[in-house]
Amino acid sequence: MNVIEEITHENRVLIMGILNVTPDSFSDGGEHNSVKAATERGLEMVNAGADIIDIGGESTRPGAAKVPPGEEIERTIPVIEELRKRSDVPISIDTRKSQVARRALDAGADLVNDISALRSDPELGELVAGRGVPIVLMHMQGTPETMQEDPTYNDPVEDIIDFLRERIEAAEGYGISRENIIVDPGVGFGKTVEHNYEILRRLEEFQELNRPLLLGTSRKSFLGATLDLPVEERVEGTIASNVVGVLKGARVLRVHDVKEVYRATQVAVRCHSFSG
Ligand code: YH5
Image (cartoon, rainbow, N blue to C red):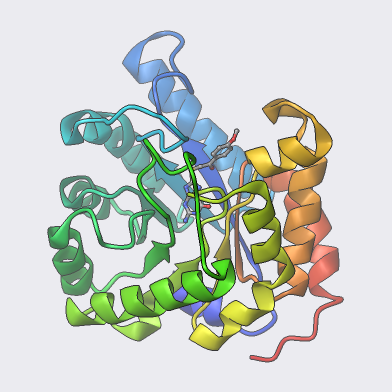
């Protein structure tokens, strides 16, 4: 089974483990050691229940600086090559850039996670269409630099669904098959705490897009705002939000804490009646 067949397969929820390969993540002890450490973290997540590993070399947290494509390539490709040698786990490349995605797919990546939903680089649409690989289209209001300044919606859920419908059409315009599209409301990307909770409360409404839904709440600020806890203390909030996600139809969960979320959501999945 390929990754999109696995995602679409009834009664399954997949865990996407987050593997950040920014310099602050695995920086101790030189190039070779950091590739080894990142790969071992990837394998550890597979062992803990991850179905997909999402590798990203660009920090997209609010206010983060831009990364040139060459640098993103140097960070991600060696890790993809090494992980591909050591595991057949599906690998996702988290990038907005066609140059990075092309090298990643050549190195054995299986799908593309584009937080800009094909609005950053038109060549990424052509690449994904040509390779016939799945793509995640995520909603974001604004850009990572400015998105948290004053997020405003008419109706957040309706606005995000309309956006995703439009981006599905744009993707199809590049020749990407609808069957290869995964959608994502983009929790935390140009949203207030209240917007994020409204997305979670009304997550079922995204089913009308008839595409598998990816949810990314892991360790995010809205959890910290509710609990008044720093990022390293957000695992329980992460679990709770992902259990809610499963009960409301999310099919892919993008998380840092794979073991904990896997164990919790394996139970939650058995309490959910899938509609298809
Ligand atoms: C997502 O939701 N998110 S990067 C701020 C945090 C914690 C985590 C400390 N890439 C998503 O994970 N791709 C990111 O506060 C994503 N969906 C998809 N498809 C942001 C992130 C984070 C940010």
